[in-house]
Every structure is written in C-alpha cells, then in structure tokens.
Image 1 (tube, rainbow, N blue to C red):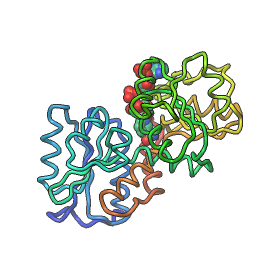
Image 2: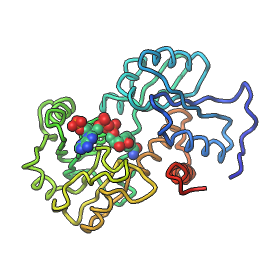
Image 3: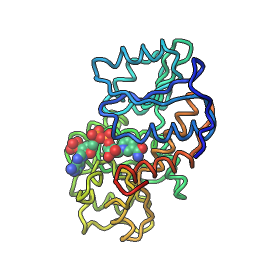
Image 4: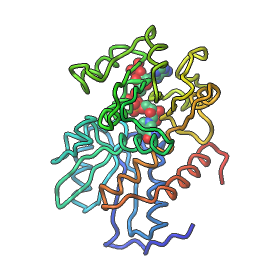
Length: 293
Ligand code: NAP
C-alpha cells in the first residue's frame, strides 16, 4: 500500500496506545495503515506504561500536543479518573478506551461498546427490544452490556465463571435489576433459549486448544447471532460451535475495527476508514500467527 503521508515533521500529529503489555495489540497496525492510506500527517505509537506512570504519561502526551490516545488493559478504568471531562459513553461503561487532548483538557470516551453495536448491526441484527446473553463479567462484558442497554436491549443476562463478579456487574450497571440479571449455571439453558444475541466476553478461544465458552451439549437458539469478542485469523471455537448449531456468528474483529474507526471520530471529527483498518488487522493477525507475508 502506498504511504501518502508527508515525512514526519514538527507538524506531525501524535496518537498513542497506553497499556501493559501492548505488544498483543493490533491498534498500531490499524491506525498506521489508515493514516498512510488517507495521507493524514500522523503517527501512532504504542507505549508500555505501568499504573504508576500512567498519570505522567497522559500529562506528557497532553504537553506534547498529541491528538489522542487509546487505553488498553489494565488502565481502562484508571484512565477515567485522569480525564477532566468524561463522555456519556464512558460514564455509562465506567471505563475509557479513548483519550482526546483538546486545548490542554483530557477527554475520556469509550468506543468499545459502540464498536460492538456497529458489529451487531453489520451482521444484520438489532439490539432494540431483544434479550442478550453475555458470557463473562470483565471489562469487555461491562462495555458491551452498557452499550446494549443504551441501544434499547430489553434484557441482558450475564453468566460468569465466578458468580459474584456477574452480580457485581449487574448491580453496578443496573442497581435496581430492571433489565439486567446475573444467571447461574442452572439457569443458563433457559436464558440461552430466549436470547437473540449471545456474546462470548471471556478470553476462551484466544489460545490454541482453548475449549468453547459453552459446553458442547448446550443447545443454542438457531435464529440468534453469536458474537465472539475474541479475534483471531481463523474461526474461533465459539464461532465454530455457533455456526455448527445453525447460528449466524462473527468474531471480535469487526468490533475492534469499529472501535478504532470511532476513535478517529473522537480525535479528528470523522470516522476512520473501516475497510483499510480491517485489512490491516487481518494482515497483522496472520503475520502474528506465522501464516502471513
Ligand atoms: P477481563 O476483564 O480479564 O475479564 C475476563 C472474563 O472472562 C472474566 O469474567 C473471567 O471470569 C472470564 N474468564 C477468564 N478465563 C476464563 C475461563 N478459562 N473460563 C471461563 N471464564 C473465564 O478481560 P476483558 O477485558 O473483559 O476481555 C475479555 C475478552 O474480550 C478478551 O479475550 C479480549 O481480547 C476481548 N476483547 C475484545 C475486544 C474487541 O474489540 N473485539 C475488546 C475488548 C476485549 P472470572 O471473573 O471468573 O475470572
């Protein structure tokens, strides 16, 4: 691909990734390819930053005139406390994956949840009025649950290996338990039977040999959409099991691409080039798996 950017100069815009570790992240590949393809005079660099150094790193980026940053594990909640302004999406999810630096102010936002909503819509499904089942109760589960509630989901049922974490997620996002409920192993079959969207928000599938996040004999409702937040160059165990049961299924690549494209909207006021980012992510995933150029 042709790099349409001018050579780096004092006018070049900086965007950064702050996390620890950061070498697992496809964000530099996606954003740099998008800058190169559009000719935007910008560079994207990943920094491995400890929790202790995060405030200084954020202040430093602001002082350097950076346009923005992505924040990844383990700093997504911590980043909220460092912002002078928190966008409604980040308030809802209680975490931030995007920071924007605007005239000395740090603005925190969350595009993970809306990335998920866009990926679901692209697959031909809507969240308004539906029941969604989420497997897992960590940061990603919280982001997609908050976004699904904001998009009008009727109910979100959360199942997690450690039940107390599912209960904690529910009480944090829906203290009165009107639309959110934690479900245990014994209620899972009933919950799945009524679901229109089923989400794997556990890391199961990330490593070769990982089992699917649901037992093989667990019946899945054939008309539903299965969304695996795990992204991989090949079919994940959850996507494979869902397709075998007749469901439509997508992995986490589209959500990841959309959260990056929507981060551009926060930084630059326009959505990033989704398909350029998608191609760059695929190439990066294949390279990392050792089967790409
Ligand atoms: P997290 O905060 O560490 O939460 C992980 C969750 O998975 C916890 O609820 C944990 O249960 C559960 N879990 C972990 N190992 C498990 C196992 N062996 N069996 C059953 N449950 C298990 O992680 P996260 O940030 O939410 O991320 C979860 C996944 O989503 C990761 O694979 C990440 O790559 C992916 N993700 C994708 C995107 C995207 O854009 N596609 C964005 C964010 C995250 P316990 O509470 O019992 O430990």
